[in-house]
Amino acid sequence: MDTTVILHRPQFEKTAVSTAGIGIALCLLLSQNLLISAKDINAEKIASIPPVSINYIKERQDSTELKFEQSITEKYKNAQVVDVERGVKHVRMIKYYQSRPVRINIVEMSQGVNGKLVLEPSIAAETLANKSKISTIANRENAIAAINGGYFKPQTGVPLGTLMINKKLYTGPIYDRVAMGIFDNGFDMARVQLNAKIETNIGGIKIDNVNQPRMLSVHTIVYTPDWGKYSPPCPKYGMQLVVEDGKLTRIAYGRSQIPANGYIIVGSQKNLKPFIKAKRFKLDLSINPEWKGVNHIISGGPYLVKNGEVFVDMTAQKLGSIGGRNPRTAIGYTKDNTLIMLTADGREGASIGLTLMELANLMKDLGCVNAMNLDGGGSTVMYVNGQVVNKPAIQGGISLSHTLIVKKVS
Image (cartoon, rainbow, N blue to C red; front, side, top):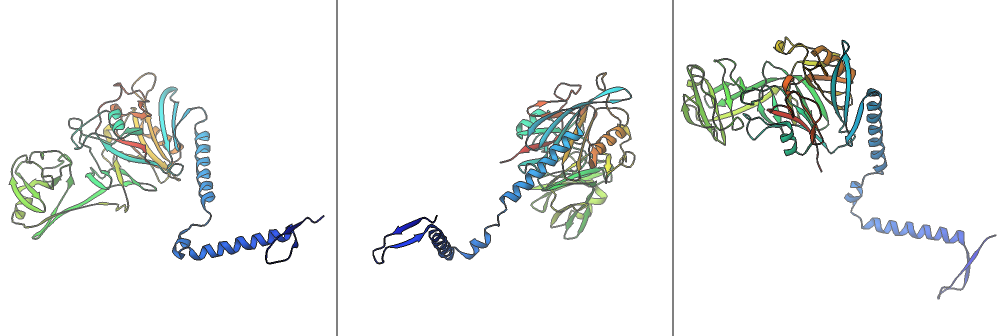
């Protein structure tokens, strides 16, 4: 039965209208109002309004998170898995090699699941020649997880190998060892070479390294304020050129104070004397591969996994001394850019450590398409949610040169 409503209008006669008619009228009125409102909206603002994509974005996030959760469940069936943060898992497990146990800690991190996660290296102090406990560095950076970084000079703490933080190159490579590049949306791994020179108005000076201990007396090395207050001593028959604001301000034959707005070139007199009359100096640093857009670089070695295959180039990277069964630290990433950080305790009955080949096979089994070894032995340490979670020989781990940290930003 059709219901009717009587509308009273001063200028019209009483009219019976069906509810269906009212619905149509209201729809037309609303449509007309929307059209009128749209005229008042700037066309550019209309163009800038995205299509209905909130649900789509959420579906993608949910799909990535679901895949991440499924991957963790499948890989670590007999392990203890703890949620550290959305997109971050801490895994504890024991594996057996030659019927003997190895205690392993793993952190997996997915920026695809949580875009607020950041991965970056962090040095012990403002200058390179320093060391600090991992907990001290992690607390300072508000890190939710961290592992020890690459090799360093034990006496001073200076990192040995490529280190870039926030696009700033702190140290150059040694023996072109493998390093991992960290980008906004992923990672890359390659052996890194330094391309460095100083351009002057009378020619160029080839630079062999930046902020690294001297390997050969004939090398020419640049020391920036990141090194510390003073440059190291000259090599035999060497000299130092102090450059400030692009100009040579001093010639020295011993340690010199590094200017805050400059650097010091240290090398042989034979290589540097021709440039004491130069008027302009410009330091030009780059690396190979070029890695456009790279934010951070951390060095290690040797490779463990390369392009999905086990690849341990220990001899090529001059790392023969780190063989055997030892505590190990490794990093790698999967095809979907999930980061994997791993430590294996060693040198004790309850955990015998890993060989490099065992470590390489483990990183491949965990899904890494590329992975590399970091400093191990006494340096191996992992920090999660305010505490050291593995068992290094020294409680809390030894003092380190630098670490690799995961933190959450707002």
